Image (cartoon, rainbow, N blue to C red; front, top):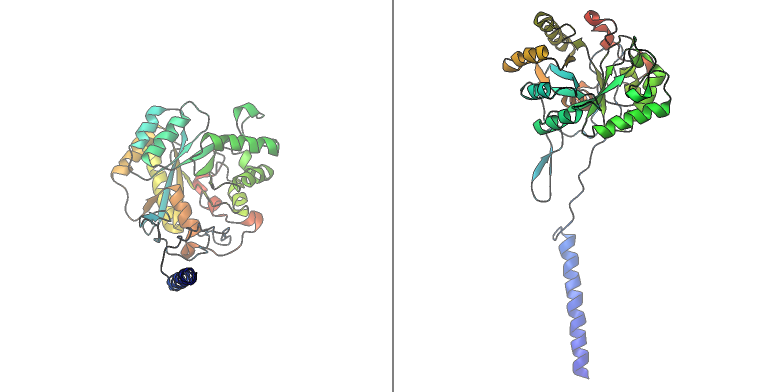
Length: 341
């Protein structure tokens, strides 16, 4: 009997010793611990410099270095932010109107110049263009059809967003486009010289976009567009087009517009130029791709958004105030004034 009590006492003692060892081990940092979850930084809405039209920007709330990487439990490294482009000035070229031709899509896919594609949803080759872009690692946007000044009364079946539509109809059309091209990173307007002047309509559009992760590019088909300003009041990362590269089809005109865009980038630090899925434009950009100009950095639209809205050194650190924000888009488009539908 006494022997049994001794064994039980010995067992209890060993358990107490083991428990004490565990406390000492984990208290000193030893043993396995779960890795801390990787945090995704959420930057607050940025500020726009209204008085002088310089760089819009958004502060980086975390203050981390852009080149920082996250280390997974396996030891494998993964980039936490987009690649860091060169020092600038920055030039982003957007190609509108993908969705109608496989051949022109394939042609643009062969260019080495950084581009961003904008695809019109629900066209015969829209999904083909999206698939080719994803294979090639080319970022693309939704080229959302909007009503132009010369259009007749809108028809809901066409999928065109226009003045006079109910908020429910506008929201439904946007959600259909988003579902059709789920890999899109942003949106810009296709035509829209009437729609983008409508403050109420743009309020509805940007309210819906604000619930997504998409950025917005104001194509500025109208010098009176309120789309960019409305996007900013909703906290949406946004930019605007300053140059239409191929409004006229001649190489001479495109070269003039291209140089004008480079000049704007040198003055302001960045520029967005829009071109289209035309063979003449493709031939022109192939020459630029083979021999790109020096002293500028070509970037995609997602990269430009990262530069403008995530880099504290380009942040204006001021608040957005309604309709009077950032008139630079209008001011720097003197040669393109008017409604380009």
